[in-house]
Amino acid sequence: MSFERRQTKQIHVGKVPVGGGAPISVQSMTITKTADVEGTLQQIYALAAAGCDIVRCTCNEIEAAEGLAQIVPRSPVPIIADIHHQYKMALAALEAGVHGLRLNPGNIRKPEHIKAVAMEARDRNVPIRIGVNGGSLDPALYEKYGGLTAEAMVESALQEIAYFQEVDFDLIKISVKASNVPLMVEAYRQLSAVTDYPLHLGVTEAGPLPNALIKATAGISTLLLEGIGDTIRYSLTADPVEEARAGRQLLESLGLRERKNVDLIACPSCGRAEIDVIEVANRAMRAFEDKKIPLQIAVMGCVVNGPGEAREADLGIAAGNKRGHLFVKGRNVAVVPESEMVEALVDWATFIHEHGAEAAIARVDTALAEREAAKDRNALLEEKGADANHSNEKIVEIRKTISDN
Ligand code: SF4
Image (cartoon, rainbow, N blue to C red; front, side, top):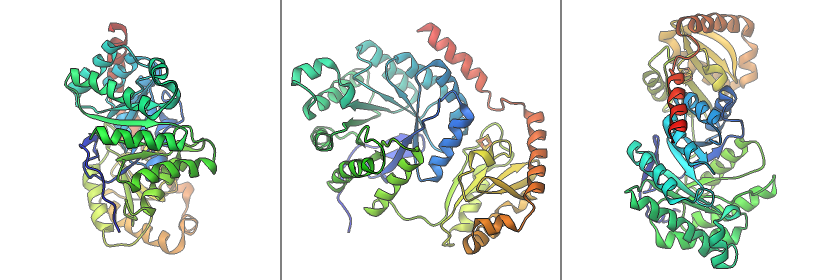
């Protein structure tokens, strides 16, 4: 059985298509300080391993924008910057290279600021989500409608669309979230009747588990079963990995996303990469194509950051100094020649599938593997320095953007 989905325009958040019949994507949001680059990347990798397609990070201060300049080139999934009060943070996030923005129309209200951001996003081909939130609706709309209503939220979104259209910007997706499920469902129904931009579904501030799961599932699945919604986020007061898992499970249980065999994740490659990540990842993909092994497997471009970034994966390999460093659940387990990386992945994946990760780890000398990884990690750091992605140059531009505006 399949559901008829409402036709929407398609936009792309980085490599992920949203709307226009694309698979419904799962989103989540990091809860680290975005300025904590390593901590945030670890969370992003954990989210990607849990089935998250797009990750949002807050961009609430210049340090966060500078963090984004370093996070974006190393993230395995597209990154959206969440902007609330300061339009300059949106400009800084665009400078940092984010794949999307989320603007809250209740919090950034000056038309000239909204249009300045839209023009910059238009010139960079970056989409914006109009993220209306019941808790922070424009007070003027509160007054006009005598409180928080579905009509008020829809009008807030339409006003923002009008500003965007004035500057010829239409890479838009929209959300009208509320913590009250019937209200949120009604707002999305009304919105979908008047616009064909893709919709991002969510029940905001759903609260702690397990109640939040029920609330969010009630709202999101009601709409999905009506064919409404192109991307979803569970807002849980919990580890964001739970959000990604819940989103994925909901889509799989509604038959809207396929169940996975091997879930191959790969870093996007960056200035640190020691191998052609795309080529190795594609080879690995082909090698696992017919194998029914439901493991998450990571192909990482460098041993400096790879094992840490992908430590949630069941198995992974990271390149360094012509060698492949295999790791299981973030623990280094073996070293193989670079030319045998894919074969080694297949062997280890087969073993783990049959005997479990613990048994795989138990059969090797992890201390030796870690020493070898440390050797290559140090050699690479010495060779390429700590800023292989030239993120510092972007940070200088971000500071200029902030002081010029
Ligand atoms: S090459 Fe290394 S630092 Fe760059 S994205 Fe891949 S794993 Fe991360």
